[in-house]
Length: 192
Image (cartoon, rainbow, N blue to C red; front, top):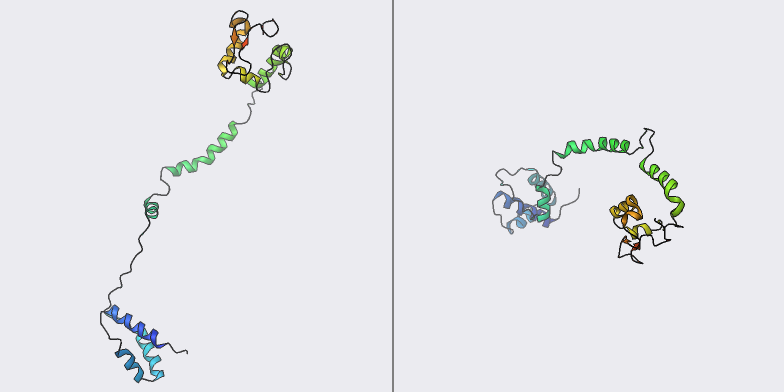
């Protein structure tokens, strides 16, 4: 068994006596232990360490101050109770949403397919099959968006046609576009 250093025994004894409320002088402890033998020191230290302190008052632990952001996080509720049913419902909603994204199985063509067939039948002769222009104005590569930045203006022009916009030379489209507004019956002299 190893011997416990004297200064550690002294410090332990002082702390025990301070916790018990009694004051034992530091000079009496080394004098008493110097008179005793080394074997007695170990036995006495073991006996005092094992003996419970009868009338000890609990030591008051000093707590560190808690940072304000930590205190706020501890006070805050983590997940509100009303959110639990919502969180349970989310996977079911995801499945329903994904099922709604599939194409309709009614056999009717979609709006995109209908528009493509109308363009091929009525517009591709002048504007080209890919919208690149020809007899009619170019419609691809952003030129249509430059002429009609507002979709309602484009729909009105398509619905009424160039004759419905006004007499020949009436401007239409965005005046801020590069090249200015277009004029009806101005591209090739024919209504567009």
